[in-house]
Amino acid sequence: GHSSLASLLGAVPPPFAPTAPPIVYEDPEVTKIKKLWTWFWVCLILAIPTFGAAAGASAVLFFILLYKAWKLVQHEGIRATADQAVAWCFIPSWNLYWLFPAIVGLGKELNATLDAENVVADKVDLEQAKWMIISLYASFTGVGLVAFIVLWILYTKKVKNILTAFIQANK
Image (cartoon, rainbow, N blue to C red; front, side, top):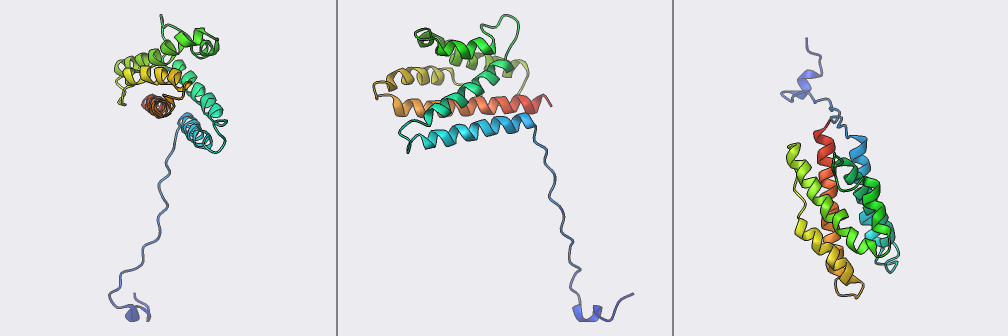
């Protein structure tokens, strides 16, 4: 039955017990990629008060993401291994050429892998990737710096999104 206190409450429904929020599991590799992206952004923002010094850290984080993406697309007959694709970007003079295969070529490989594995994600805009590199070269004259930074952010975000889409699709 009812207690003597029940008459005091009248028709008030009983309180609901709080429910625990659902536990959402995120793949540790996705977490690492998201952290790389976050620190890429933080360092890029810190480049403003440090007069560009922190942009070097952003570049390192970018090449880590580039390496992970190249590892993802490895297959028979590919142009370069992940090690080669990133390392050859640091060879003086050669890197003026190699940035195109390393960045635009990665975009082609990522797009082809998205199609081959039926993974749903926005594809890399190859023209945008080319213009990112061209604006990088122009940024040394000061002309293309803003364009380069904007295109760099867009490209890096796209690579991050594709990497996380592949990891989540292959679980």
